[in-house]
Image (cartoon, rainbow, N blue to C red; front, side, top):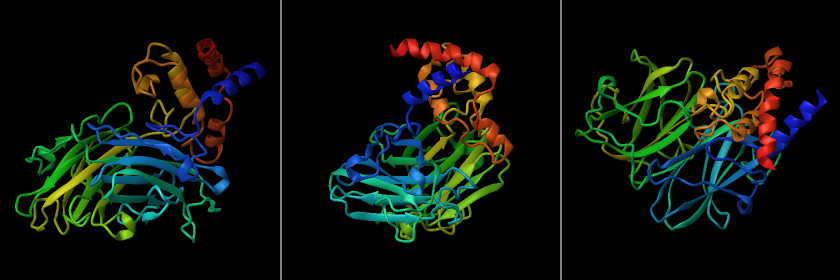
Length: 389
């Protein structure tokens, strides 16, 4: 048993401290040590599952390069307790460390402890997103705040060659535009949209959500800046029942954008709707028109192969059963490389026990994998070690 545990420890050494579509390197606790985030010109968005650690003193910085006039949207989504833990605050800084924007408690009509910013760059260059735990001084230097846990960070800009566009007959659930990439591996996408039709427009988008996955979306107005069109956003189930609503989130209440956060309780098709303020999501008069950037992301915990919301023995068994042959998330391909290998194993083990409920279930998940599973683990570890030589 001791040799097996040492093998597992070797795997953990090779893994990162926080994992997702992009990762943090710790210590990224200052502008000088910020982790760069790249954003694709087609999808326009990137996202990652990150961690607030360091004994409740952590601050995470990320660098984004922007051109003059570029639009940036960033959303921090707490991953526990119905989007309340860790309670985050977010700020945007320029290269000189001057704070440009700040936010606390955005999304779901301020019924979450997430945060969001919307920004238009005047000058080209590097800008820095800072995320830390809520503290009375709104300090981003690493003061004690006591907040720990995972959060989803989604970052987007207006893509120069967007793959995500609307059809403009998408004014009901029946004619909703499908969102590209809404099934399988975690994904993030953004696209420029438009409210038209003389101030009565409503835009519907169909999204496939897997059970247990965290979903977030933002509508960032592109005029005035972030004041026009004044947007409202809602998420509906397949029967048309409204699940979440938001209006006037981001930038500490100083924008007319909208942000929602939702954890799917069942797999299926859901419908995101954007309309003007005071619109009724059925095409009623609201008087708003103009462009907005729609950002959508869906992530689960890297390692949660079976989408149960908890990384445990069951996930490890699935991954190892598909070693070198799996090509999908459900078979253990966690990094979309079209093969299940040591990189996927590292992702899983780095997040062991995350998302599991409190009490005995969590203790069991966070313990060493069961002996039967450890026998399979040896096969994967042996392959990992051979490849590392």
